[in-house]
Image (cartoon, rainbow, N blue to C red; front, side, top):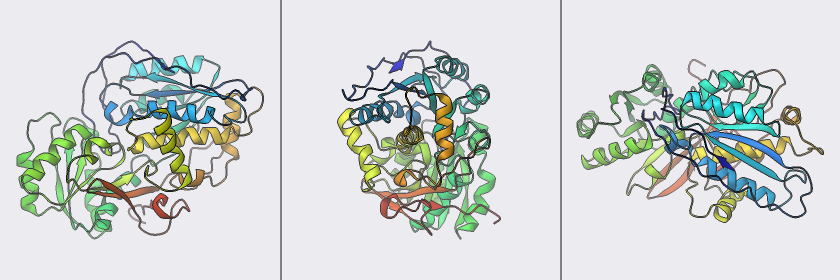
Length: 418
């Protein structure tokens, strides 16, 4: 069920996993979706999960797909055994990428005592809304997050993916190495200070992988052409250009650099990876996925594809932001697998604390164990990928981070200085 919220002007931008997202304002109403149809054998009370997500606003191109994933997940769960005999409903709220709106819809969900847990996909507003949610006795289980002051810092936020440094940054260099590149460069948005935030790490991170760091260039997400910047990088001999831009701007930079003869790889990580880039004819991409690879053959990944094909046909599902939502909801379901007659918010916490070295069959990037009263462990593993000729493949480096094998196997970063 997707509810409407009143339009507001967008607020301060926060970088989505170093794939910086453009500043914009947006106002539109979201559609109300019907509750998922339930199996007649599900006799328990309905378990409600709240989802706060940017369906509109500056980060919608990265975040919004997770709303349809949540509805498909609910219908898929309800078509079988539900959650221990309980049907499930996901109540989705659009925060419009605006901090005040995000807090307002969070308060609405918390005030509804029938909602037992939350999940969020808020690249621009997660820090703002966390200032309210951190004091509420409700679990926030994933899904998409980037701020280290939230994920791995607040005890009621349960991490399901890496959040910012070091995994999101270091994987950019690991993936370049795996792709055979040797001269690394980056183009990042000039609108937000956070876009430049990781630049100081680029030199040391390149050295860790024995790559030649050529520097990073600030560009405006609204400038009409990136030809001059492309020519500069090509003249320097770059064979890998990391995109610190929203997918829409990244698409234009790819077009301009390709037109000037660039034949190397473009780096896209976390929320920057979606159909906007991967469907560009002839593009070569490499980077890290914070959500599991949607193309994986493993049963846990196949469930995702089958559910999306059945309940949200024609919807794009090729994004780690989308698979991250599925993982968060599956973790919530696992936590409530022994739910009693009337599941509560406390039952979600109890269930999460009972999990030991949980990987959800490879959907989590590393085994996760949550401890009462303590923040989630730092997530240092991530899925490396390469995309050529429209086909994605999983790349690996070192031992499996999540004990999975094949195309669901994750790789782990080594923090700088260790």
